[in-house]
Length: 266
Image 1: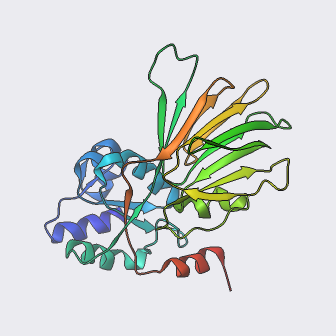
Image 2: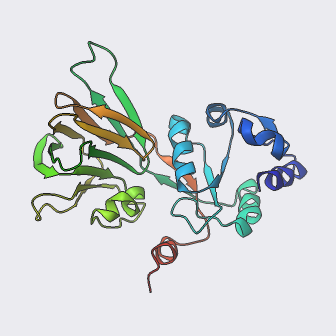
């Protein structure tokens, strides 16, 4: 598929590049994923949502448009099918396309053990997740939202999800599906001890401060299911909206069509 797209682009005098492991097979010049994120005008992702999440994290402030071509079923992020790929690319080259600007989250871990070192900072398009490390143990998670105490959850973990991530892990935890253009986040406890602790939707302008109390091995912070770090009871996690959104080339499929097909509604 990459070779076919590269040839199609060359016929239209558009320079194409690929990651080293695919470049020779696609017949194009090689750039690392980091170099691609820094230099190109359009990123074409072949694969699934996980591949796109990894690329979106690298692009950062550049806001390079991402066109996701799904090689499996219809994805929530990689919306364009293989059969639609050439037509979608042609529309982009002609400037006849629309984009979604999806909010992303920035999670910073401030550790008392860091000894003055810079805090660890992560970027997530889908979600920031805190999970227990020991089976059978429960976490106590304090959450402050917009400098106001929200709740102290006793649960297996906590999910802070964007509207994009509302159809992922947060949905499995009982959270709502949020229309992608809404400026909101979902706070969803994972298997809460108190059954009345339900997922809540809050403005994305809020900054969240999270402290985790865990016996023994502590807990794990994971962003988009791809980056993880161990957190202890003395650590402070701050989660806020990123200053720069992730730009996705919109397909011809409506959000409702994607929901129906992906979730097999009706």
